[in-house]
Picture (cartoon, rainbow, N blue to C red):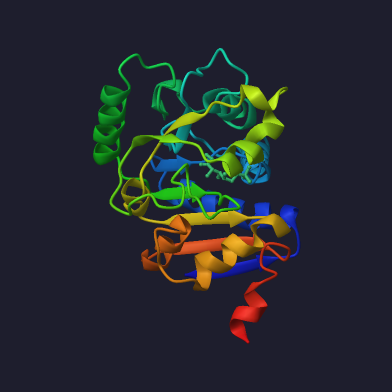
Amino acid sequence: MKILITKDYEDMSMQAFKIMKKVVTERPCATLGLATGSTPVGMYRLMAKDHAENGTSYKKIKTVNLDEYVGLDRSSGQSYISFMHDNLFDSIDIDHDNINIENGKAADRKAECERYNRLLESMQQDIQVLGIGSNGHIAFNEPGTPFGSVTHIVDLTESTIADNARFFNDPREVPKQAFTMGVKNIMNAKKILILASGSNKAKAVKGLVSGPVSEDLPASVLQLHPDCTLVCDEAAAALLEQVRD
Ligand code: F6R
């Protein structure tokens, strides 16, 4: 795993943006695997700024998002599809037909998981962006999720619900379930870019980099990926020093 430790969140976002821009420039029809949450927002802002100032085009780019809350769709401000429009898609020239994410409102949830798996099989991610949960989850693959998992529905853990409550007016509004790409779908990406910022991620980052590869800490599977880059700020990297000792 390649590790880049940056001074702060802004610097992490800039390093991540540079990696993303290289992919988009070298392969204008690339498939980008994208994540929601606070961590990639700075990178998305830089992508939008670069599009506005330098005309980097996303016209032929396709995207696949990691996850979506069960029961929410575009009409809900808290859905992940809304988040992606607000933070990136509405600020770049992407063809909206090329945007892919699970349908949180799908009536047949099993069929929706199967549809998404077929889609992922037909379009390998050239790069997959990931954040990391404070419990080591990637996408919504919570501790204990089999490494062989593909798109499925998860019951969110109490810690994930608590972490995500900040995006909702009332913590009771946080959905209890989500659709998520499985670990196997993520590992299928040609390149992985995992980002982490803040001291609340330090323990998970330590497990990601040097813990045993174990389903107890889903992110640790990335140690097995042939092209994975971790970009994290000093606060998130705080426990890595001890690892090197
Ligand atoms: C988001 C996702 C989650 C987040 C993780 C970190 O699509 O799949 O795994 O990446 O929960 O969230 P933030 O970035 O808000 O700390």
